[in-house]
Length: 169
Image 1 (cartoon, helix red, strand yellow):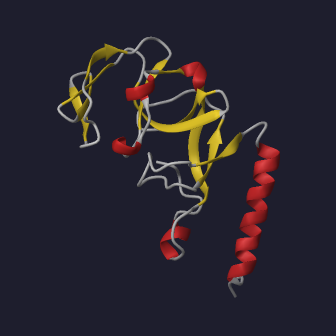
Image 2 (image 1 turned 30 degrees about the horizontal axis):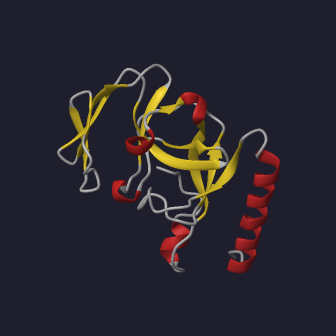
Image 3 (image 1 turned 90 degrees about the vertical axis):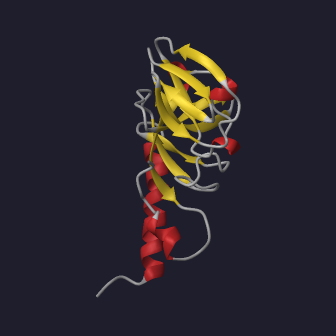
């Protein structure tokens, strides 16, 4: 017989709290999504688990230190040695169009990323404050990769809970 729903939710919540308390120092930490910059993948209010890795690959969502005491999230679109350009409402990496979005309205000339630099972009560029405003993010400023959604936000209903413990992609 399946466990009653409230009991299951309580067990999940207790496990998440234990993970947050014990794992924060060694494995990572929980991070709350503050804006709609990463929608639709991540919604404002989602609680993520972010590991402590400073290695990043294109396509991964990472947390980075934007200012002292302020973490931001962004998707890695280019890494060291790659050439990045914003033109014609598109992001170009090494001469290849990676994404086209109306939010990519401010053009920037081609720039080669140096060793230890990453270009981060929000999934909703019109709402994002990312490498287009802040410049390339140094590897030393990376705080970890978003691994999964610990607690989803959004309207109540089955869609919300399908995102519980889903990988952050």
